[in-house]
Length: 267
Image (tube, rainbow, N blue to C red):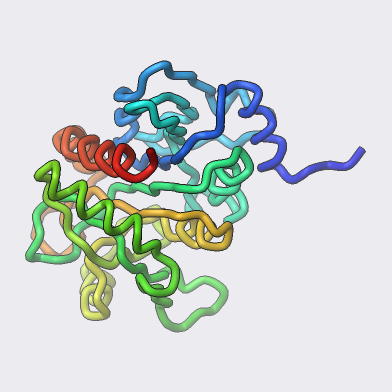
């Protein structure tokens, strides 16, 4: 018997559970899963129900897909992601993106909780990702690799995100996201180097998903919730509970922004 790629098997399983292809899919980062509470006529599919599907292990990542509607727009949420530092190969880290493509979804919003590198900004603000650095130094790479807006980021989705921010009154910064391997937080020296090269936020996810979405020719948008200042920006110690506490505090603004993008763009 021919063994199909995992994304095709997962997509077939999900297509038997949801009524129609979603107009837009969302990867919900650490502490941001409550956005799916705004959907109506919801259908939940636990990752554990899907044969061979991996499970998230990080606090704040639930581990389920939610299908539902927001202002009649069919939306598909991944509540919980897989990180490279958990020991997953990149093929697994990026699996949800290929699943979105297989179920017929052409637009993706990829969100995360990130440390703020830009000292002019504030914890609790949101950042639109307009470019990214790969600071993982994998495969013997000697220098960080940067991708900019012109190379892979969808201009129409960026415009709609900025419009949604103006309409809702949500503060939306625009900047460059830096991907570090983790799971430990970065040192002050590493953060200083990221800032020197033009980084504005740092986290341990998202870049693999962004690059996979680009390969799959999906329209995508990246949004970071700035949950804490990165190491060395202030004298305060870093901890994951601060990340989750901040996402709880700003969940209203986050939901308003994402909802505004969906209603105005995906419909």
